Image (cartoon, rainbow, N blue to C red; front, side, top):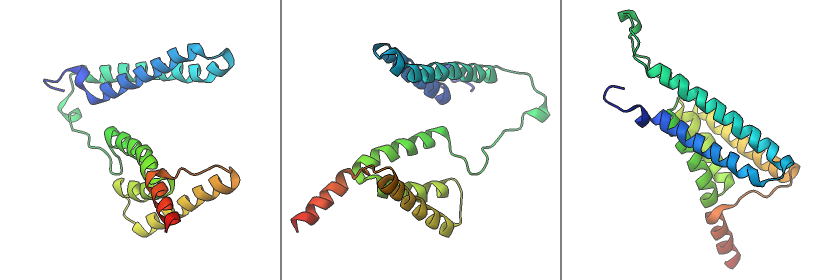
Length: 165
């Protein structure tokens, strides 16, 4: 981190943002009745404790430590991993696209694209697994949980178009 401020480290920015959300969530639970507030408070407090711990570990890792030349080799990310910002972007994209395209196509796309992004190259296995998992989601939500599956804007427009025809 030569020449960069500690506070501009993307990991620290993400951890602080998560801490703000956890703190806001904890403050919001003050308006709940005690029984309803128990679980959200517990989650918020544990999240804040873990965030402080993670930031402290990150701070200690950034401190300059005298190392021998054998310890200065750079670590590369292992194959099959994504940086945190790509993981966050894929999750946010998934939730946004559910409202636009609907749960079924977005889940299928997510289950087909994510293994490929993680380096899995057996496309037949990815296709079969993604299709079976999506069909399983539909079956469980529809027949076991009796829950409606979000259709999305495009699905609603398509359904209206087909009704009008």
